[in-house]
Image 1 (cartoon, rainbow, N blue to C red):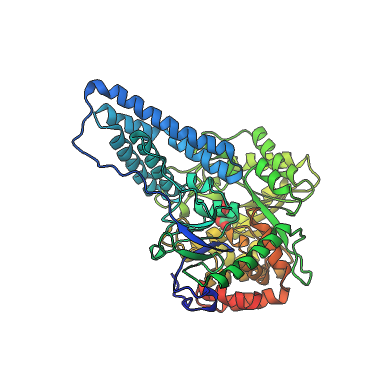
Image 2: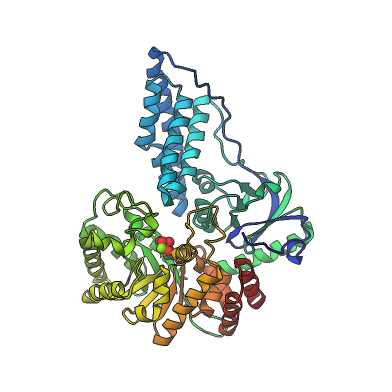
Length: 568
Ligand code: PEP
Ligand code: MG
């Protein structure tokens, strides 16, 4: 974590204690601190044994508790929309997952009480998930949440989780389970601050959707006691204790005005002096694309993550099924720019029908475009389906490959895409692709920088690791230097250079990216208007000056401060 001179700074509103983490969602909030209710306390009696004739009843009790917990998740999923609904539905299916249920029932059948069986079965599965790393490791928080809820149900205790505060409050926690974050009311919980969690954790995803300030990876968050008054500055990543209430209230009001202006922003994306920058949406399927298109503000899709639709599929979806899916996204933005990414299978998004099951280091393994080594036909089927879907629309879709590392890979992919009358591009996620950007761009019509992976690989830091969130911060000057190189190559060849990683959702960083030569910014739709608004208040020259200042910095904090000094 960077050392920062935030103590006593004028922006700390007179707070006597401040703690720093990784900023995820901008905005300023002020209120009393609340924390989630403790999980149910129970004493494990390792010697306790259920009598043989009682074991069937104990299994029934266990089944009933699991069903209740899973049904509650499903009911909340039905009452939610967007990523909240997806997160809750995923937790409902994890609660019903046969592997942990089988492990628990085996224990009960051997005489272990249901509470103990639940706890030890989930701990066993959690350990396996942790070893698998990536997205699976991220699910350990979900598993432990399921454990606590099933145990509370078995003990007849109230459901653990977040208290419903009477006044707008700041929620501080070690980490937040999806069931907690997805049910949040943003008028009651006005900011999130967590000790764990990375920029792509559930907490971050939901905070972005709710539009409430969020900071993750705050090492010493326990210095902020429950019940105290605190502020959360989601832009600088600072939580401050007992600030001057009046000074901070004025700043909160100003931040509210900025948020209201963002909500009212209507595009098109451009700087104050008219330099055009496309503001685009990251989508996962037809419904999310339609929702992104609905307000009529965003100018197209900058990243359609096709693999997300197939995470639970045992077999490759048919070409017809894929055609329908791609057609739904293209149709949502008919006539506008739509960038479709071919399957980014592997690592944190394993697909059952392609992923190598036992790679020791999956992030560096056969993922993304590399799946053609073992399954060339899968990419062909996908490109055929995209070409077929494109027939029903007026605009030609752009198609890009993930995890391109060499010029030859870009050339081979571009030929396949052009054969089908589509526009070829590649993602710049591997540092080698950034280094070779001029020669890669010579092979394709555009590139899109995936800052999530580019940061992970540049900094050699797992993007899912909560401990390494400071390293996986896209403000790292080394990452900005690689982006500068790609931007310069794009300008020299007059080709588009997009950014579709989380960096494009940060309004301040977005301006720096434009200063580095980026021509389009694609993010979660909820984050895009704030980016468009910020861009509209600064000139291209200011963006360039901020980019130079950030590049000259030695740390993420210094880069942010340097950019803020120029961009306001
Ligand atoms: C990225 O790596 O920045 C990106 C957009 O791809 P994903 O997050 O899907 O890996
Ligand atoms: Mg990526």
